[in-house]
Length: 360
Image 1 (tube, one colour):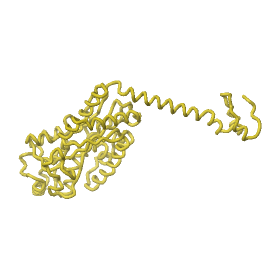
Image 2 (cartoon, one colour; image 1 turned 180 degrees about the horizontal axis):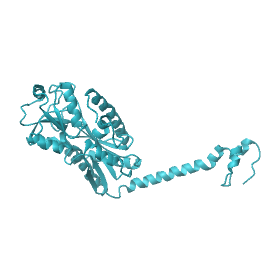
Image 3 (cartoon, rainbow, N blue to C red; image 1 turned 120 degrees about the horizontal axis):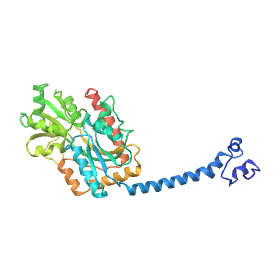
Image 4 (cartoon, one colour; image 1 turned 45 degrees about the vertical axis):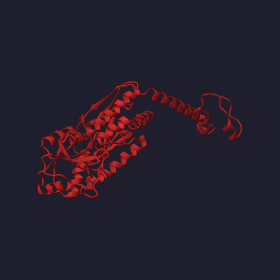
């Protein structure tokens, strides 16, 4: 190694050509750490950044190169399932890779959501989530097998959906005011179904009960398919759940729609009034659906899927499909969806507290 001579400032400015630095010289102050950083560490960091940038670009260009999976934490034929299949089909058309829809229902979405949280963060397992596991459940369940914020990375808010208040055709009510009056006359005799404890359908009805002072008995199912079957069969009398899953049966005349839960009427069913305009001023709830991935999924993959999802949601045939179902396409950045999830957790905490919903 060249001899270090001269003043300290000169020694600091000395260019070291020997790749081996004696640690004892650094400890004695004869070679400063700042010099070592200038000569060795900063170039290494720059190289690392360039390498990672090239690697990320190659990863995005190559993704996906094998089949993908979208986990749906609910039964087939429900809104979440329909949206996942619609988006998944378009992924296949765009990228040439099969997309498997993996239904894992139970515990109001907790089973499928926990499964997705533990999947490899490589972009090949996504979750079509809802307001339940990523908004309501963190406030409703004492113990969950996942953290809605820490264990996931947002991709895109896909759609928002009104809930629709529907009744069995045999129930002698034609509008919201008549339902409230009937429920007050028959406390504890009416039953309402939901696709799970803490689901949007459950919480929307709990808010309805709290605002009207009525007493309806909650019957829980593993998804909207079971609710629909028993509602049409008369085993339950009322439901207040996602409009897309119920509209086909409403149009077929097999159940009766009284109102939608949003502040304005749904473009898919403009003839159906809102709950607020039908007599319950101030009432409003909305269901939402979005794509997330396991935490630590590379950002370049999250961004690629997010951009493709936004493109898909603008396609005329997808817009027509969602409109028929009563869903409004959204599309967002991963960062926007992460912020949305956090705000939903705060919002539903207040609803659960105000409605005095028992923790599970």
